[in-house]
Length: 181
Length: 37
Image (cartoon, rainbow over all chains, first blue to last red; front, side, top):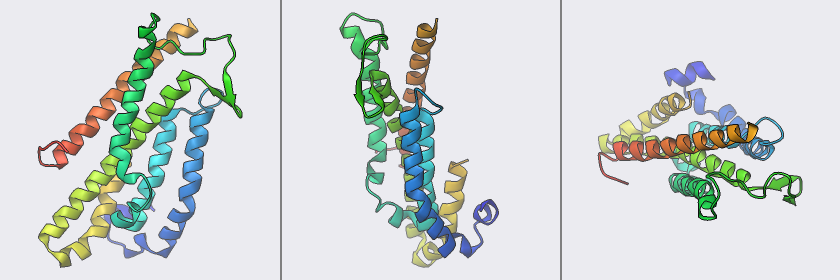
């Protein structure tokens, strides 16, 4: 995929094959991301890598379908705000124990005591922190891709509709593929 | 020792996450021609 995509010259990059594969891969990517996030404390994986995998899934949608169709996905428009919500949650998890007279990053329930289980997931504040990291990194990646796509689209509309038709597809794919590197 | 290491990892991650969020703000401002979004 790399070669024609980075030159941006081949029209088959956004062809039927790419679109089908992108559509097929989207949900498995998200499921993998959730698995990485949940496995964080027993097996390899954490919020950061889960968010990177999930944002690659969204990036693939942008590459294959373009800006307008990718933004019809739910919650893509909220990505930037989600990053700051995640940052707020992370700061709260870090700072809340201070109000109770404990050191920063004291996690509840304490080691040795029993935790609430949701299926096989252990509900502890460390998991909340990891979910917050997931939100920040996913919001950052999707937000930046979205902002760059918007900027390119604005420039193309400024230059005129005929240039926009010719330029949007390959310019979008080159810029976003640089973003994913 | 493991608990202290885990605490430092948490603090490190918190700082990193803050930097990432600030970079997002910076990119958004830059692409918006110097205005805050």
